[in-house]
View 1: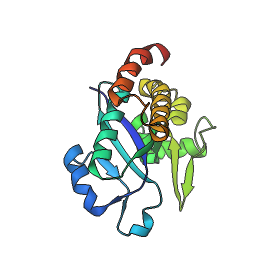
View 2 (view 1 turned 135 degrees about the vertical axis):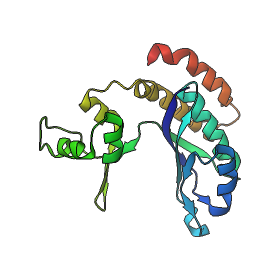
View 3 (view 1 turned 90 degrees about the vertical axis):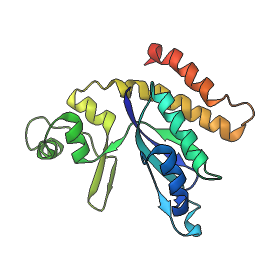
View 4 (view 1 turned 135 degrees about the horizontal axis):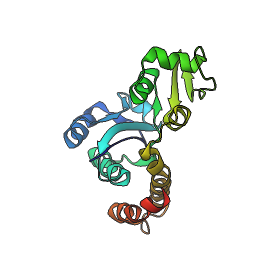
Length: 185
């Protein structure tokens, strides 16, 4: 069964006392933002993981269920399946050294035009995997599956938030996506 990397945007971060139920449900495979003071609960939280599933949709829906069941009032707002990566992450995915990736980024050796970082704060930069994979000429089938799957699940999450009575059950969404993704991805 393939493993899929994705992140979830949550309605709020988790409190420390909410971590044990999530850990028990996911065996520690989901990393979340944590707060200790209630005044910080008004900002969105996040969760990220590498999760095995028959499809990306199945993996996402399973983690959504675990996260939401682990803490009262916690809701998943959005999903992102095109991860942001560090230089070390990029090196691991492309099978090169971190120095080789640094040289590619600066254009010090070989081809120029490495994708710009998506985030750059306090000396830390992150790059979008889809752009890096394209630059290296890597055909990642999970990225092909990710775009329509994430678009559909984000639509379902929005519908569920606005009119929950008409939103289909998660298993119906997963089933429908398993039928169409092979034809659109």
